Image 1 (cartoon, rainbow, N blue to C red):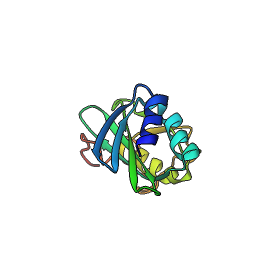
Image 2: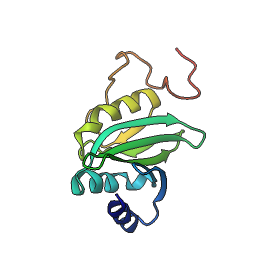
Image 3: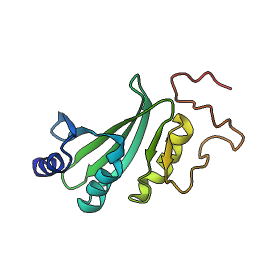
Image 4: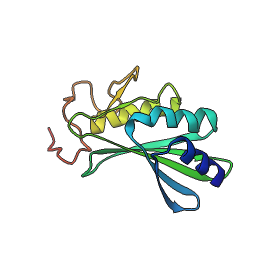
Length: 143
């Protein structure tokens, strides 16, 4: 784990690292670098994207990308923040297929546009659901 973490710190100088425990690391980086770090972890280092999560926080919409190093049992969670008013982040669905449906879900429930995603269409809500209503947003009032 320490070798990979050192490599990450050397390659992504601006990254903020929080070590939750010896097998769980949180890595905060600017959203403009998500494709680069996802490619590095998945394609170059062989880590598996196990899940993504999105949360509406006071800072903005937070997206967590949970990459697993299955050989060591270590999770590297990439944390990015996007604006609440116009939430956009580049897709990683062409880097790892595991993100395709999860990005759709986050788009649908939190309103984050995944730029470059080829199939942003409703996954959980009906076709006639108002696209400006996002049930997991802090300001959601229902329909």
